Amino acid sequence: MRNIWTIAKREYKLFFISPVAYAVAFLFLIVMGWFFFSGMMEAIINSAYQSYAPTVQMVIGPMVTLFLFTLPAVTMGSLAKEQSTGTMELLLTSPIRDGEIVVGKWLGSFLFILTLLAMTLVYPIALNFLVQPGIDQGLMVAGYLGLALMVGSLLAIGVAISALFSNQIVVFVVNLAIILMIWLVRSVSPAGTGSGLGYEILQNINFIDHYIDFYRGTISLSNLTYYFSLTGLALLLGTVFVESRRWR
Amino acid sequence: MIEVEGLTKDYGARRAIDNLTFNANQGEVLGFLGPNGAGKTTTMRILTGFMPPTAGEARVAGFDVVEQSLEVRKRIGYLPETVPLYSDMTVYDYLKFMADLRRLENAEERIDDVLEIVHMTDRAEGYIGNLSKGMRQRIGLAQALLHHPDVLILDEPTIGLDPAQIIEVRSLIKEIGRERTVLLSTHILSEAQQLCDRVLIINKGKIVAEDTPERLQARLTGAQRVILRIAGDPDGLAGMLTEIPGVLRAAEQIDGSLEFESSPGEDVRPAVARTVIGAGYDLLEMRPVGLSLEDIFMQLTREEPEPPEVSDAGLEVADDTTTDEKIPESD
Image (tube, each protein chain N blue to C red):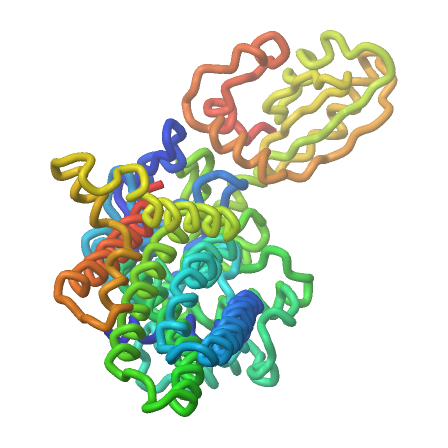
């Protein structure tokens, strides 16, 4: 545990001197600002002729899509950079387990994104003052919890992929491709067109589907299990990838 | 401290190291001498637990490098060939990170100590990315020393340093080697001679010699090689030279010159000169050649009883040095 924390702490600190992390944060926050502004404008215009109050979903909705495209940039350097600079040799010959390196790397990036998420809380808070009688807090808690879980699993996938290559661009592209694949996989097998285990997997693997319930304000065990499993599986795979480097 | 037995590593079809067996005791500086690609780094990477061997066993401080890798890694300080530094960290933060990974209780104290040892105390707050190559090497060394390791493994510790820095790093290694076991690799013969209590010469994954530097030196420079150049065609001269007492072998070179080797401690040049002139050749040049590392390997590998190479058969007169070396006393 202590080793994981040591790795995570370094990784987290590194984000605050990394141009990539600042670029991601900049893009993320500026787009969010724009969505919030335009959402508010729309609500004001609409309120002229119908009873309409913007909800916290106005803030959370765009973040989901935004994360799909920005998270690969956050983790592309994770282990790939260690490999390209030779510091991987340092980590792999230190008295720590391969799994601790992978989990530590993931935790560091997860904490960074949580920091970013915390900054976006300014919008729900602002919204709370703008609408009567304030925002639905349950909706906000569920929405943010779901986001954190989804981000966690996507980051784990990113860390695992970065264990495979030493080129950050390759990691980014492969990661984006895999995220898009999991996201769009359902469209090749629409509901009710098949049966069997493979079909069931294809139906349920999509991480956006599992997010919808959180978005609507409900926290269900099956969705929690999905994200925990996906995160665990990806981290396990990442560890296997790191171990496999020793044998190559 | 280090026990290696039958260590073998294959990279696909290529055999990087082949059945290595050696030991290193406490307080001993063991040198790994060999050309690039000889298998030095591979051996070190196996010892540090970076990768497992294909076959064979290695133990460090009594722990198996595969089965008890974490225990081994706790006891090893390792400086890889490419110094593993985070250029976006300060020297102090980097060492603190390494100390945390090694769970050192007195981290601050140890960092101060190692910085002092490598003379980098004044750069502790500087970013590693701004350091010169020599300084980076020293920080790499500081990192390896941080936890008082029983065994220090240094892969080409002086490569890329300027002469002043080389001297500095060497004296540092010598100091450390008094109490702890040091395994260092180099392809510089004189460096191995200066630093090591014992030298392993490794070539193409195999140990070709193991001895103290002094004895190795005596063995290696015992025979002297001289290049001889004459005007015109040196046909038949090689045969004549080998008949001179003290000449071990003589062979015609591709460029038309002749090269001969004399037995240790004997200067055969005057006799050679007389023979050349006496036979009616015009002597243009006679020049001793120092032994390069490549020559040493050739010499060492030739010492093993091996059938003479086919390509040399037509040129070399005395091919079997194993028997010839036993007749240096000729008066």
